[in-house]
Every structure is written in C-alpha cells, then in structure tokens.
Length: 314
Image (cartoon, rainbow, N blue to C red; front, side, top):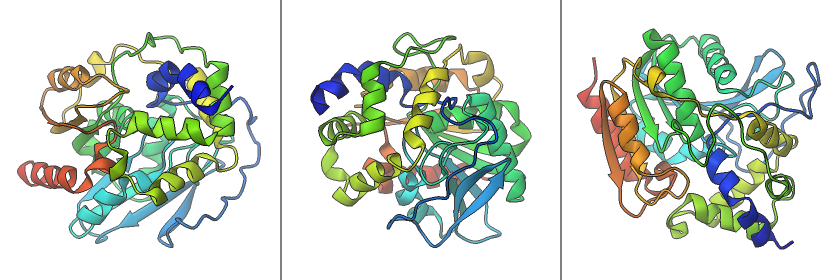
C-alpha cells in the first residue's frame, strides 16, 4: 500500500478523531516513562512537571504577574502549535502551554490517562502545581474539547474561554461509543510515511504555503517521539463524542469561538452550534483557512483574541 493510499483509507478516521483522547494499551500502569529525546526545536524555557509518573512538558512566557492564558493543542500536535500566539501575546500576558499526555515531548502516560475526563483532571493538577488559580483557556481541536469541559466542571477557575475549531459535537458517527481504529490509521501513525504525512497536513491546513518547511518537519518529529504513536492509537480506541449541550450550557465564562471556514475535519456549521449552546459566546470565522487558524493566520487570530480579552477584562 502506498503512503497516500494508506492515508486515504484512514481519512474518515483521521477526521473523526483528530481532536480527541486515548487509552494506552502498550504501557501498563507503573511502566517507566522514557526520558524525553532532545530535538532541535525544544526551547530552553521548557520544564517538566511530574504528575503521578508522567512528565508534562510545560512552556511559560511573559510577565510572571500578568493575566494567565493557558493554551491546549490538538490531537497529534504539540505546544509548538501556539508559537504565533505566544509571540503576539506574551508581552502582556503570562502564556502557559504544555504537551498533552501522549503528545510531543511529554510522551506516553504510564497510567494511560487519555479520556477527556482524565485530561481535565490532569489540567487541574497542572494548574495547581503552577499555582494558577484562574486563567483564560484556549484550545484548538481536541484541546478545545478539553478546555470547554474544564470550564464546565471548574467555572470558578475560568476567566474566559477561546475555542479554535473545537471538538464538541458528533462527527463521522462517533457518539457515545468509540469508532474502530482502521489498520490503515494504525499503520500511518506508527510508520508516518512521507506521502501520507503530507496528505494529512493538507487535510489540516487549507493553504500549506502558510506553513514553513521547518514547522512541517517539527510536527512530524514531535509525532515520532518514542511512545507517541502507540499513545495516539490508544487515544483513538477510547475517544467518544457524547451530546455536549448539557455541559456547554453550564459554561459561565465569556467565550470566543474562532473557526476556519475551510476546515476539512470539523464542519463549519458546528461553530454556530457551539456559539448557540454556550450562554455568553461570540463567533469569528476566517475565509480560506483550515482546521488550525492559530497556525495559518497567527497575527490575525491573535489580534482578535487581544480585542476579545480587552473587551471582557474584569
């Protein structure tokens, strides 16, 4: 099977699960977490926070006493997905971002905590370790799903919420039950053949000319870190999308919904559904932009975020 055929055979599965969480069948509880492998793109500002056997890579930028913004990346991505926003916002905000369990340099979790509920609790624990009582939370794709679930469960810790092409509603038949992970998807995640990887990028970004070659290589390098492929697969085996509206309706924080109009993974109409379901939400959409607007048009989206933060400051 060619790399492109491998990707095309799994495209529906990628679209249905690119935003979601995973159990890890390959790592038994108590298993030793591999030491992070040094990569050229890792910042000297990174540090690792231990949480019950996991080592979570965290990057903080901006003034220590400034209002806090916590950013959560999407499935198979890493904290580098927010480089543009961090550069634009760190002059006035304390920007905190981290690699989700099973992603980037954090790597697999020895306790296999990959469900959305478990990831919400990992986020709470991380905030406690960083002495952050309240913050603005932003999330892209699956990171958005974790962010709004956190906001629904811990409203007293959320100042504002920014959802970027966020997971929420059912897609591709995924509801209360996880979808089977096709062999083609397993092969793609474990082998990362170049043609399939390039095709997957084209599914995420509407205009690949906006993404540098070094950034494309960085995404692939982070996906290929030891144990991540197995963690991705475990995540997909567990991912579900139950009816989100009861939880969305509980969100109290002012919410900004940002969406690329050419998102090939989550239908544009879901941006309107999320806006309608959250009591105090507004929406901005971007023509010609795909599933990760914070990467394709970082300056424009960061400017919209700044405006939202100023308007909703308390």
